[in-house]
Image (tube, rainbow, N blue to C red; front, side, top):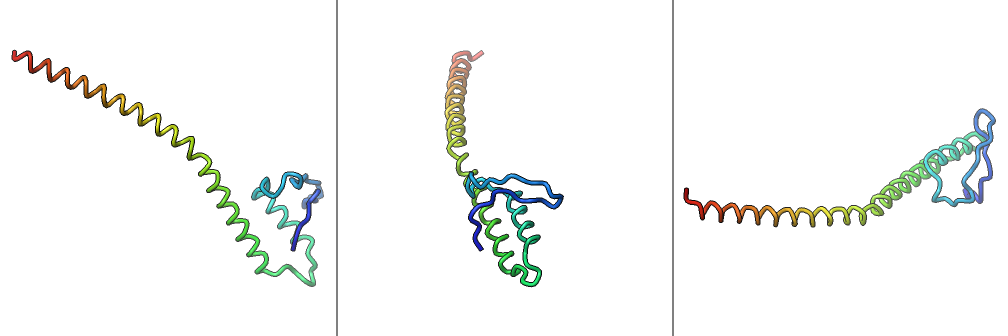
Length: 115
C-alpha cells in the first residue's frame, strides 16, 4: 500500500483535519499515524479487510521510526553536553589548583610558626 499524498481527512465527528503532506514524512508524529490508521480502518472494504500482519508490520515500523527519532534527538544534544562538561572540567581544574595553593600556603605557614 502506498500513499502519494494526504490533503485532508474527515474525523469521526465529520470535522476536517489538516495534514502535513507538504512537510514530508519527517514531520509526522504519533498522532498523525493514529489518524491515518483509523482512517484506513474506517474506509477499508468490509469484504476484504486489511491483513493483521500488514497492520502489525506498520505499527512495528512506526515504533522503530519513533525510536530512531528519539536516538537522533539524543545524539544532536551530545555536542552541547560535551561543551558543558568541558567547561565544568576546566572550572574544577581551576578550583583544584586554587585549593592546592591554599593548602601549600597553610602548611608553609604552620611549619614556620612552631608555636
